[in-house]
Length: 236
Figure (cartoon, rainbow, N blue to C red):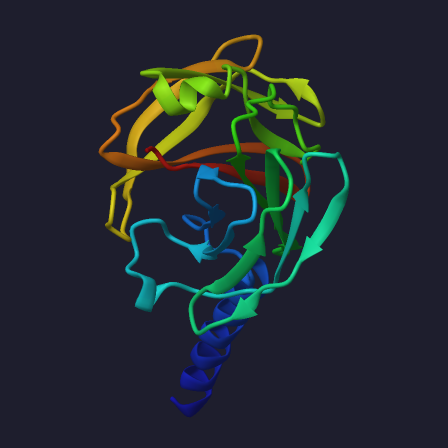
């Protein structure tokens, strides 16, 4: 009887160990995002946060992991951005000294064993009265703004494009998470959208809400590779 129990225990232990190896470092409903404002003025110094979590978790219950933040300045230069690590998020303080578009890109080291997940996210900040057309930042999987940035301020509908390695892809996996302004918790998968053969999709804006747009793309194989990307869009 002891031998049987020992074997059963070994079997359970092996199953648990394999599960930890296979799924370690990967939370399937998680994503990363950058909660910047959408508008700033030249000379502003603003605080904002970055997250790795389920979008519908309260801040106190969110996870943490090592991440890197960069910004593309209006003049095209790329800079690393320091982040102050808190218990469940990173806090960022950034100055905005140039007119134009700041593009923030957040990345997390690939994680997982049988399925490797690459996480990335972006947001934009429009500084001053210049509204240049948005250009991709070069993430492996990226949601990019097609509409004139002025429409973020005044429009009711925005058009986006999903790119993989810089090329448009059709996908039925565009997820819209939204949170009422002033609220920290997002409604997960509030809406699902499809990107057409040119990778394009449209979002109708409700200006009482902030949005996280998320898309996923998987390359299947002996070791699957999954990409998750976000575009954080606050409204005015």
